Amino acid sequence: RKEVEQDPGPFNVPEGATVAFNCTYSNSASQSFFWYRQDCRKEPKLLMSVYSSGNEDGRFTAQLNRASQYISLLIRDSKLSDSATYLCVVNEESSYKLIFGSGTRLLVRP
Amino acid sequence: EPEVTQTPSHQVTQMGQEVILRCVPISNHLYFYWYRQILGQKVEFLVSFYNNEISEKSEIFDDQFSVERPDGSNFTLKIRSTKLEDSAMYFCASSEGLAGGHEQFFGPGTRLTVL
Image (cartoon, rainbow over all chains, first blue to last red; front, side, top):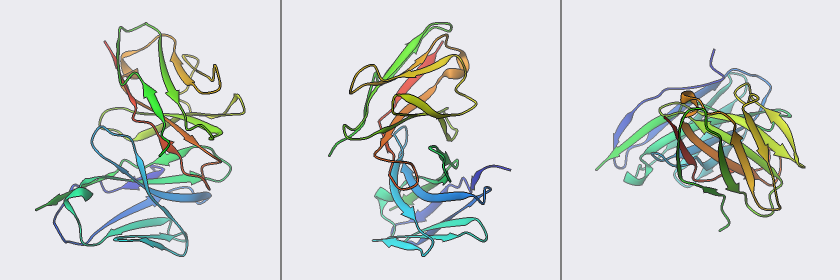
């Protein structure tokens, strides 16, 4: 079983649409959770951390379900500039490393 | 805004040659990392470095790899004898503290091509 699993997509949506990505992780000892964004041939950049209570940052909402080991990202009112690959990332307790999913590709069309 | 920098942006080398990839982490950060991403695949952790020693490494980080902080600003990854399968994008990252509570900032990467 993969450590962090994501639907690869691509999700092809019109501008203004709402789109949701899901992610599951295998290690119940995972402690910290993140969504990163990666543009083509660029470095990953932190989009937002994911907290147990859920959190929102403008058009982006992240949710965590520890019981189901499931993380989600909701993007409202999609913009063309949201087109990118969204990486689900997990950190395990007492570990230095980030564990990346393979990413979900989003294409926002005019 | 402070950023992680990496040089070179692209390195082409012959199989069996040694390469050194260079990184300048953000100046007040204490934790340093190398990750790699083979084309079309996920980002994979290689090694973390803290207080002048390796704090954690993955199975990928075998005896062919080494890291060093030769001075107060640079952080390097050396691959002693490159293989074709070492071709990848190598990202350096740094953070103020441990991964859980502190964002890891990534550099723009070095694309390594082994011929």
